[in-house]
Length: 191
Length: 191
Image (cartoon, rainbow over all chains, first blue to last red; front, side):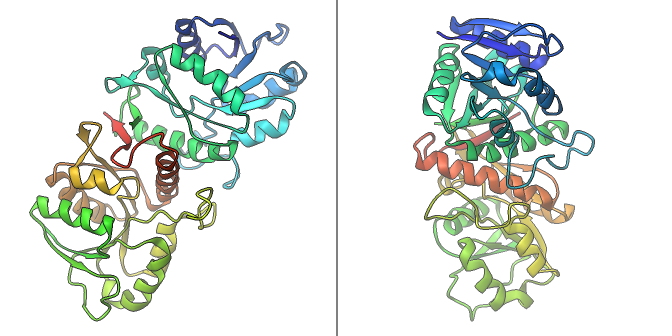
C-alpha cells in the first residue's frame, strides 16, 4: 500500500484520511496552512476548496513533482449555486494538471459527499468513487487503495472526463441543497 | 392524467410509451417519419436521436406551440464517444427551447437507459428520472405521470441544469460502453 499525504483537514480531508486508513495505507494529514511541513506521500490529495488550490500549488509545486496528485474539488460559485467558476469547456482538474506538469493528476472523490466516504456506503451499497486521469498507473494506484477500503473505484476515462465528473459533483450539490438527496446520499452507479 | 404523444418508436420511444401506459395516461406513438400525422398530446416527447430533432421541429414546430415538449436526447459524437456536439456552455435542450419559443421544454429521461424505464428499476430501486426546465407546471405535469408509473421524478432545476443532465447522460453512456455499468444499470440517486 502506498504512503499518502492529505493536504487539508476539513470534512473531505478527514473523510478521505479515514477511508485510506481502512485500506492499510499510511496516511499523513497536513493542515492547508502548515506550509512548512513537506509532503512525503506517493499520492497527495489536495483536500482543500478549489479557491485554495492555487496557493497550495504556489507553495508546494516543486514538492508535488513526480507524485500522484488527487484533485477532489468542485469549482462551484458557492454564492449562486448556479454555475461553475472554470471555463465551460475545461475543468478544475485540467487547470491543476496544467499548473503541475510534472505531477500525475487524477480527479477523484468530487462526486462523493464526505459522509459517504466516511461510511463507505450510499443507500446501503458501497460508495462509487469515479476517477478520471490520463495516467493509467496513477489511477490504478489510487483505485487499489479505494477498493481495499471497501469502496468501489470506477475508472471513468481520461482527464478530459473530469469535466463531466465536475458536472456530476455540481449537480449533486445542488440536489442536496434542494433536499432532493441527503448529504449522506447522492449518486450511486449500479452494476 | 394527460394525453401524451411520443414521436419516435425506437428503444427510447417504446420504453417511454410503456412507462406512460402504466401511469394511466393515454399515449400515442408516432413514427418519426410519419410527418402527416398531427400530434395531439398535452405532452409531446421527442424520442428521436439528437441529429433528427431538427427535422421534427421543422415539420412540426407550429403543432408543438402551447404544448409541453420533452427532450430526451444525449447529443454525443457517437463516432468518438468523447465529446458532445453542442456548445460547451449550452445544451441540446437549450437549443430546442430556442427553436420552440412557444413550447414549454423539459429535459427528461436522458439520464436513463431505456431498459431502466421499461422495468422501472435500477439496481432494485425505482429508476430516478431527472427533470430540468424553466416552467414549473410543465415539470410538475410530467412528474405526476412518472410517479404514477412507479418511478421517481426529481426536479433538478431550471433549463440551465440540462447542461449537467447531458453531462450525466454522456458520462453514463461512456461508462456503459466501457462496461463499468450495464445497459440495465447506470446512475441512481439515493434519498
